Image (cartoon, rainbow, N blue to C red; front, side, top):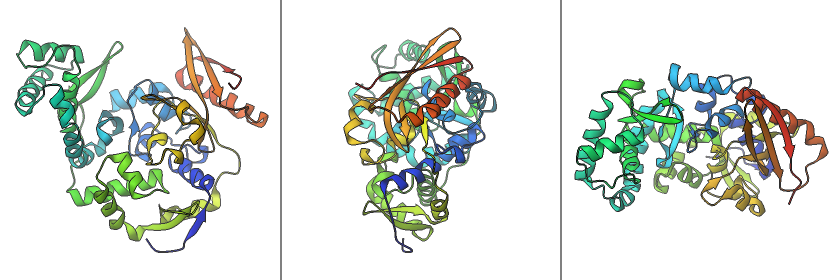
Length: 374
């Protein structure tokens, strides 16, 4: 990690991260797969928010393109990955991501499964029922829960037990989310749904994960990788050490951080115009770092992280300066923006363009409504 030591302000570091995340219009992705691949995987805790994560990282795509990539091309897969949470990832990466991260996430969820009555024997019985049930085709969570009850698997009905059993099976690469049935997402057998890439030995997988993380989130530190991936800190330090020759050590506001050396050239091409984006809820950019202040100013943190929710954010030069929501009625979408403080009038045009692009992406007419700051 030796090399030319640069001192960057936090603002310059954020501009580098915006470019890596494809949130800088100059680096916008041209396809759903490219947008998802660029960030390793898009957080997908809330499905309606997931396509919006593609929109702000691409140019000219539609929400229908995300559905096509997921359901027809099947180039992207929605399942449980980093931190044992739902993500949309490239199908080509499913094998090595789950092969490496799955055991850690399964171990981390052991206590919660025990609290729900899922011991190893119960899980073994439940996963047999799950796979036999899905062999007949995709099923909803309610249908899977019903099958588990019918076959005598000792789980509390209509509880969180079934989804935790499904989640462990997904982390083992057995199942994932598949097609839609109305408003419900169905579970499918991975082998019936998509061809996934091959797993990697743990050493190469750690190196690949570290490289991909730094390409998407750098400048960053080992503890940031640990927070994003839920890997133990020794593993994350080992990953950084394994790619040390590819990294440049820099300082961000005096603190050490690392960046892929090949990205140093971007410092000469950072955007001069201000970058304003409307991020969807639970956006990956906001949860990629150990220190929340990296992505959210402390004074606004509670307004972006509201309980267990991460609100849709109005992002300016890499920091949230407001929250927003969509109110849909028939073929119209009202994009309601609530700035935390008065916005520079010079940004009004950029905000109007962003709101119009959200409506275009969703295939509806749009109207922007800006609330006065509280």
